[in-house]
Length: 165
Image 1 (cartoon, rainbow, N blue to C red):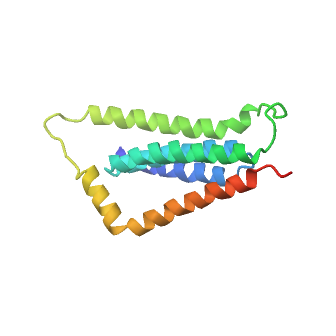
Image 2 (cartoon, helix red, strand yellow):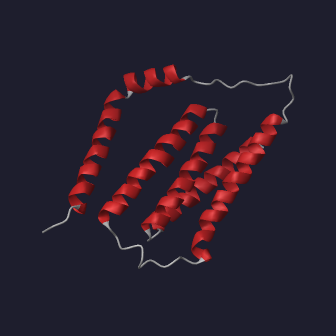
């Protein structure tokens, strides 16, 4: 059951990411990317990495998407009054992929709760302390480089979005 859910969520992640890359409307692309992040969080949870799944939802689907929305609003791609409501056909792929994620989560939770009470297999779960020690001792320089790239991206957006006189 879990292996089937893994492959379904992997397919949803790939499809949503392809839609996010190929979408012309930036807000629709962000919605597809959020869908991809949530599916990837389920994949991490299925791989017995609940901490990484939680980071995926909190950091990427939360903070990074807010940053992307900030970038789109700073670029001022058009006024909301000029925008037309898209037809349902444009929303259908995101709705289908989100429905697949929701059904998979329900199946996952129901299969975990229906397990035999006396026979529980506990996977090795890495705690926050072990994760942090490995991340910042082994990959500290990479973390700093990524944070500098995000800072440069924000400065670049502010430069592109400023009003010229």
